[in-house]
Length: 428
Image (tube, rainbow, N blue to C red; front, side, top):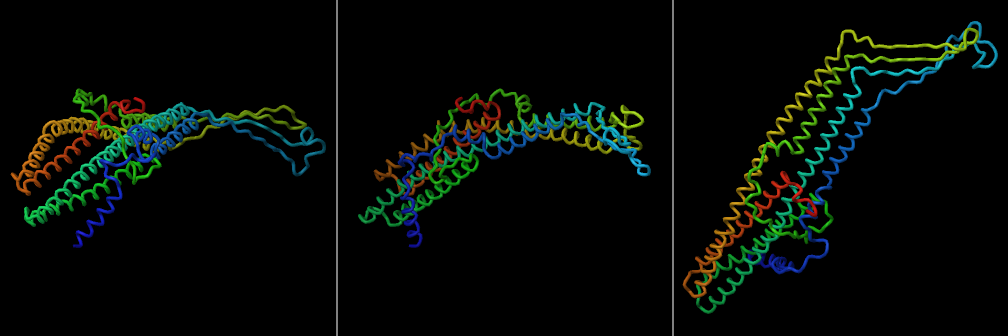
């Protein structure tokens, strides 16, 4: 009795929501298309963070591409504290050596160009990172969208199954009262109906989870409780993943291009570290004024650091290690990218074959068997157990076919996003 009471309450709660196969149009703002979801993914928070990192990398280029600032200096010297500095105008007559000068450091070894090149390559890597993160977000949103669409259809199917099971249970109860059916068989139909109602509640929770995941990835301000995905399932394309040049696709991926740019940045940084062995020269000139001696004295200065006993071995060794690290990172990125491209290609091919087989062969036969069982049971030529088995087989086949179609939609979309992203671009 407790189970029946619980199921009755759940049934009332489920009845508050219109069945999916007959639900009213969703309120404005609760329906999202695939194009809207993908467009939101192109500017979600993860992508914005990557774009801010790109802005910072571009600012580093501006900081690197400048020469050292000249230094303005002023000096008062030869102040005679014993005999005094005399009377008169401070600038013209006081016996003080007054000087003003400018010093400027000449960077040798092409340091500025190498420093700028390293920053530019870092900015190129950051640009590729933006593209890579955007692609990753598109992949996640695309998969989440079709998870939501599949959950909607699964809710439709389970609602229809629950409705049919409830009808069968009602018919069985009337037949028991009429003495035409055993009470044990009626109990089986009631159990099937109760299980179907539980399945409806489970699928509803699954749909809400899928909606929350989609909203989290897109940042759309919509109600997850009433969110619906509106789209058609992608058509079967047997040539989608055929004859693909995987090597070229791997090299064109943004994560691989980012790793290559980081190698170039590390090479420039290594060359810049080696350039530190070329000592910078500081030139200086000043104009001096000393009353009583001369009003026009010029001083020329030259400063060179004495790099004795150390030739920047530490900086060069670190730059070499970072270059080796960047090279290893590129190899790892290529390996991961190659494996992923092979996996995506095989998944697109395999899910396409599985979906075609379900839709053209397995699912039609399951429907035919279920229809024949329904007809035979209505005429008394089939037992209740056989009818329930036929219904279970049809239900499992329908859910498996929906799963195969969902897997194909996700695999085909992932392959397109990695090979032809323009195919899923807005207004394409």
